Image (tube, rainbow over all chains, first blue to last red; front, top):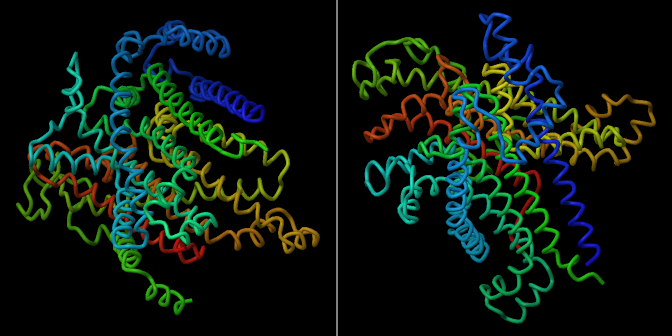
Length: 318
Length: 279
């Protein structure tokens, strides 16, 4: 157990270090700007006085390390600063959007994960059959599609032609839970289609990898049914890589929402980020990139931890 | 060489043959776009959103009255061209860095490795958006940013492959002969690292291509009036709500090419690695 604990603590420390370096990059990336932020935003025409005043407002007169720690401690206390575009508190801008984005990602995950594992097991069970080949082609194809292509196809068929779902995921204000789910179904379905393929292929590969091992051959010779071999003998040992790929795909989901949110005009963090990038509203871009980076790093960290914890060789040391 | 190629094509399953055909057609369109269409790339030739076949516009016109088919043909040239240049740059940077890390080892390896770890910890799309906010959106910035971000993935693979090669006897022989680092990397490591790198090139190209289209779709990639598939989808997206499939055409063009490349890479990987999962 001590060995396990050391590995977990090491991994956590590494994760914290990464978070720190990433926050440094996100904050100091702006320093790479030729000239400085104030000049870049105000443009050529600004008088030196305006630039100086603006610089003071952005606290650009302070040295970078002081600004960085101000920013970092501000964030830790929930103060993200103000938007340049409309002078509102960033925390206020992000408030509801944060929940919306997490809700959408969670909904997609609830649909995608069981579906992917189920299809993966089926493909491993009936490997090299027509069913397996068909699934292989379909998943390879869906990996190759841009998110917005899938999104618009779904809109065309399910929203415009069939009229079953709304084509715009408008979730402003208080909505009952199922109404919210209903309005989010198309974006969630898009995300599902995008990430199910990868998870399913990895599930299939993880199971098939094990099928060459002697204990599976033993089970085979005993005359067990193929379904039982896969469910009882192969699956438990394949769980670690499957959990790993599922969590990595969840990390992808959180970032993948950006384009899907824009397609469906969904009021989430991705939409905010894209709007701010086109307005060059740097403080908001910094805060929302930090959110995405942190979510991504934490989920990847979680995947690593799960891989360590579910490893039977570490759980039962000799 | 030609004989081998023909043998390979005959042996290929239909999916790989389909992929090869798609790649050939796209390359042809990208090269000869100006010959294939009577209109200019961003020439306004009619009124907005003309339906298909009206006034000689086979696929109608877009939101500014430009010929849709012309834009799609030119889009092949711009979108594929930029993605291709970006992928090449990513491989140049990532490949050289990866080989160097493997060949030199020691602190070069450690330094490059940790640097890449940090870069890869940030989601690519978010990183790209952050840098594009700071540096502004223009084609050279776009190419350099995406190439650098993608070279981290190439670095990982190139290093891993080269690691197994630099311990070979023939590499040691070359070193003892007094050959320089560049010679060892180019003449000893590179030829033996080719198959996985070629397959990765195909996959990376797909990824970069989808990534640039995604950015353009968000309005943050290739800027108008340059014809580009991602931004064409965005510009004409309103048509979808009327049940018109025109905006799906450029998106479908993106999808078809990536599917084609993926099929070919899938087949190529299967061929070169002897990868079989039929036990």
